Image (cartoon, rainbow, N blue to C red):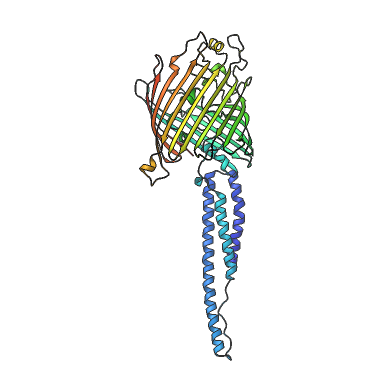
Length: 491
């Protein structure tokens, strides 16, 4: 009986393991988790039954040995007496039964380890992407799902409109064809609806990125498709749990036009040493026709039938010394013509644009420090300004410094998974820092911004945010201060 049970359970394991691999390639991860848990419970129940049977047989064996020993003693006491027979024999050799049970135990534990269910896995950032955007790199094969969302209430302290907004919901869909060929995409829904309403224009549905990775070596991998430009802190890593405040810093909206993506191809990996990471792409460039006094944000082509008369190059390098955990130092740059062979008031101009930045970050022991400086230079700014009938700067610049500290270990030390960090940020942004001769700068584009707030995470995947932003605008410009309350999540 116990041999039969052992054989059946071994056969079940042999059949189940390849079945689970097939499921992982084609089914939703939640379904995989549910089925895997049921299979494990069933196998453990059967294993418990085998262990109980083993214990029963062991008890019978000991009883029979005692009976046999007693009969041997009687035989020695009365040599002429006929030998008595034992009532029964053990159903299986104890050593063989024990060996099979040990094998089954190892198989069940290996099955648990191989399934590696997603809910028990910590989300971590890879290749500069956000933690949720990186999930596809950790699956064994097949489909990966993730995403994030943000919501916001914004209250003006002076005259202005108070607003509530479902800022965005993002769905990451990835597919791991092999260990070396990976598809990763981001589909973004902004402002709840694409229809206009009585209070606002419509939102949008966009492919934020969609690319194929071809993984080769630590030092050289390839990427092709609609890629995020590797510039600044937030253009690649902008999930709400990864930055302070409800609004992305103005520098990383106007000088670095987050979220900025272009069609192209490139390489990435570690350069010479595991502490030194790089990314370098050749992509479609900006379209200067969309530039304004507020910056270059309107020149993003976003992969929408993008003009490819002019191309651009972007490169980034980050140094993360293992001797100082939590420290990151780096720089990135974008360069390319943006005229796209178009006619600007009867002229064909190149409009070369360079955007470059340096950044540093330190996160350890609850302390979080971050700083960045960014600059943009626009060639042919005078001709472009005349053609667009707007002052386009020849040089833009900005910077910000921020600091935060997780106080939760001091307040509730028995809840290590929770996080509460007050923070402060000071920013300076000027998209009219230098303008062509004969043009008047728009002084309202020179702004200093002070932000103070609190981020609270009951669990690492969910954040509640509160912040106050104060604006100082040069000249006669004015922008009301605001209080923002919001939430965000990743999965």
